[in-house]
Length: 556
View 1 (tube, rainbow, N blue to C red):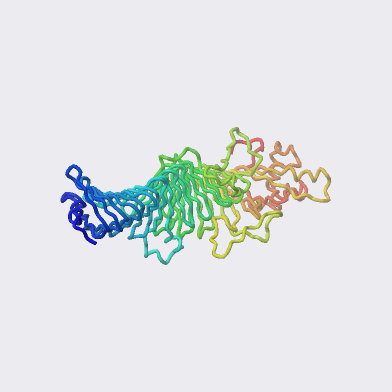
View 2: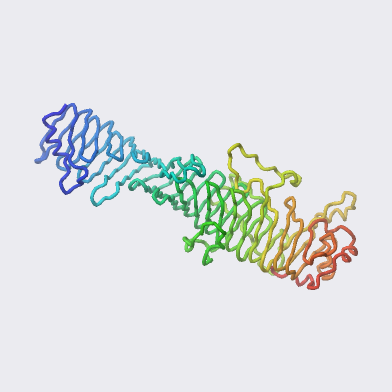
């Protein structure tokens, strides 16, 4: 019921004329009992309820009891507090509202809801500042590790593309402190954790702007997707309609998936319809990004100053590439090719599995150690060039090497990963190309002990040319094609002195083709020991540009 005290109480809650005009005066319209006392010329009223206070501008306050202070234009609300204005609602156990400043301070089991979009903020303590002259947007500050649920901005134009369920799924954010500004911006700090069914992210600080549709992570930032882990000192993502579109990791960036790993000063990921389509990474000293792929978005040069000095490195299916810049194309999120630009080097490398010990945000991929002296690296296969491109094809599951593990079957509806069911088929090095690969003979069960031991001593094949193309079969080198051959050496394990005999070395290099020399610089890396030495010399005479093998051991 209304009491005689209602009129004075309305004056107590009235906002001064020069205050927030939209808030206007407030009126106590419902209560059980009210008592007022004078202190220093100002009234203090105690009200028991349930009570309801209505303010001009659409704000309504409810609680079990309240105390109103005329001197400060403030009302304290206790138990079952419920505040609501046209765009927001707050519930808590305790709250203090100041009609002059438009500040609402709430404690104990606080839930704050954006009625326009449905985003919510829950925690033990929260401050809400209403819109008013000089404060064009409402502001919320929550401490003591609140939980924020952000509903993505609705984008009807994208309703028919991609994974609509994920795009409309809210982001769940936890942090020691969360600040929101208006309906479109939040900032979280202190051990920030972000979750959605298709991704998890962590950082020291995070900001999200739903108007610009961006998410920024700062300080030991990580994003873990369904098929990859991405880490860096900073990670920036664009999320149009809530879906992942473009992600950039900077400063010691790293991408880890089942068999694809990338380390670099900066890594950029490009998505389409929620599937990864392209990856680029480049070193700090580059003036610009790698060559632009037709139809792909330009990566830009942002963040160049923050990159490290190391070359980026990528490993996929047992092959590692390192260069000033790297680009991977993954149409439909299936690995198609990886290209290394400028000062490129590739090596055979044990497949990198995704084990718990190897998937931490700072579990770095071992980089290629370039030879420090003018000698050949003989303990692994390698290729160098101005550019190197590795081409991947769907794996032939019926022709795997003995002991090879078959690919993991996907469940129904599960998207493909960047390297699912693919294998390296071809490697092409262009521009001052060098290659070195080992050739093992097939062991003859009827051969003697000395002959059997040759299988443990592979032949060494070294090529230099304008372009070198390496073809693989069953994940092993099958054929090497060279254009503009400048040097070619084959070191026979059966003849340790062959390196000193340029004629025999060149003959062995040609004989590795198991056929007459049809095209200079074309070699086949299978069973180099077949036939007699005389037959091989007769079948493939040395190319005219042959040099003594002792001169072919310079640094590639």
